[in-house]
Image (tube, rainbow, N blue to C red; front, side, top):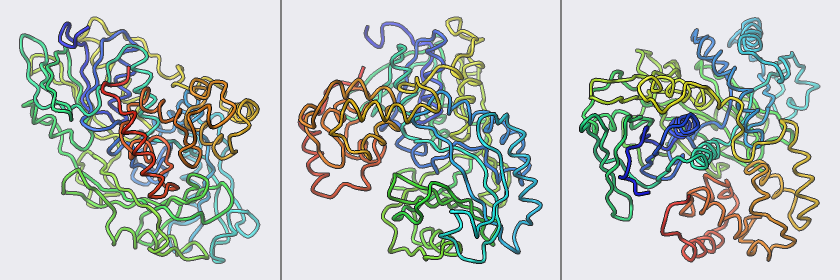
Length: 505
């Protein structure tokens, strides 16, 4: 059916986690949905997070109890519907003399354990870092601490899987297609769009959802709609170094300036350290960590680890801009991570704008957004469903990853253990669909490098909207940390030969 044949019920602008979540929720309630993303899915803020599904322990001291409660409630929901890309993580918080007192840390962790519906994750406990394995890489002055639960998420794949599920349920997902101008004609939104191949499109919809993240005000400008909130753009930068510790615990560190940061096991061989909080007033392209931010994170980590972290040790950095609702906070880290949803009917057709938010709460944000629209769109049901329906590949128990790995090891003995681990954590049960009955690399079209096969690349291109090397290596597989320049060139040549002329179904 041509795009212009019938109006969509919902047109979503923005292919980050909120936009993909809204598209999935709305199509599952019976709406006809179109999602437009100017670049690749999760290309912006949604792939630049600290990769955590968490309540935000530090937000308690800013009295954001409602925000923390909501996020903690979502933590186990997301684990349940996506056990391949979301998994539990135990954090170690060393006590540091002269900073937050021990009793305050214990009180905060008590609240953290009890205000958010924790059921399956283990509770907080006090630990002796002289005896605990997590104390081994730390400097000797850190003798006591706490161990508590939170979760890890592959943030970019969370976006992809929401979009994939939306498409499987009938939504149209168009990447590399920019909404140039939006206006209301005869009670319908008209969206003039163009793609990166020079084609122009005209779409119509009964409602418009602005889920453009840091570009939310820009999209409102293209729709000639006034904003309801002022936004504060805050840059968060992260560094990645070679693995600093052998265990699977993560760290929550405090600094004398009142800020906190994390050190987290990352992609088997690395440690992720972040994040910073810097006000950002530049363009939303070409965002990168400054030398000052890199030095800040290295110096902070070196205050805790026995082995110093130096800028020369950094193998990769990434930075994202968080769109925060301006609340008058003096320091960037104190600005609210809460979200606002505004439904504007003054344009003549519903315009719903999502301001702010955090990745952990995306599903609830999407549910709230579609609830707001449902009363104005007869085709949209009021029934909630996303809290129990697994994301693609996530239809196995939360403790079922080991069994899935064993299945793949038995069926495909040529695959290294590290590759099987990565495949399970990226695709879950969906890997069966592209692994098939392969008994060798040749059966998968050959190995490009580091366990990436031609068959997997084909899946990414035909089912996950991948186009370029960066899409595959940094958002869909994270193998960019391992690929050499020559291996990147080999992958690029393969993509040139396979490059599709149409969008994935």
